Length: 162
Image (cartoon, rainbow, N blue to C red; front, side, top):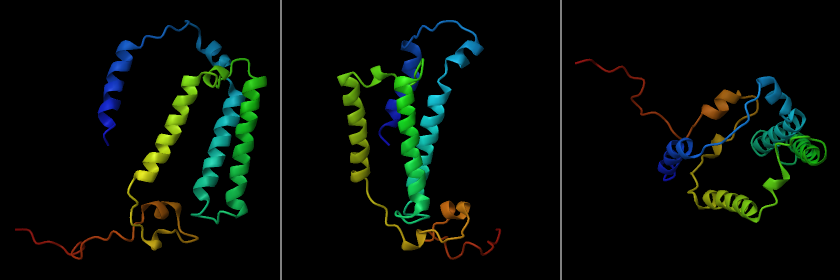
């Protein structure tokens, strides 16, 4: 919650003070420079991996093939993307220079550990066991049903107008 003022400050100050010079080229030449193969494997792999992570333990058992298969496909996809970025891409979007600087690696490590610290230090909500979705329930109902929060008892009774 306390990060919103800093985000707003950055949203205002970055466009004012950061001036990047780019070459004036056509849209077609810009689209030709995009690493479509690496992007496809990287985004597809990460999406598949995250789908497997989100399914595991909620819709399927952690040990089930329905949870493990997307995670394995995701790891393979990201691995192919990294190999492509190193050896095949003419203009990679994951440049090796992003990982060669000590300060960049320290920043990545700090971001990773900050995520762990925030997750471990946040208060755990008291979840009701009935929040676990039932097989066959719709995905919309799965994400919008909160049985531990109920409306007041007079919620459906009509109120008299004075």
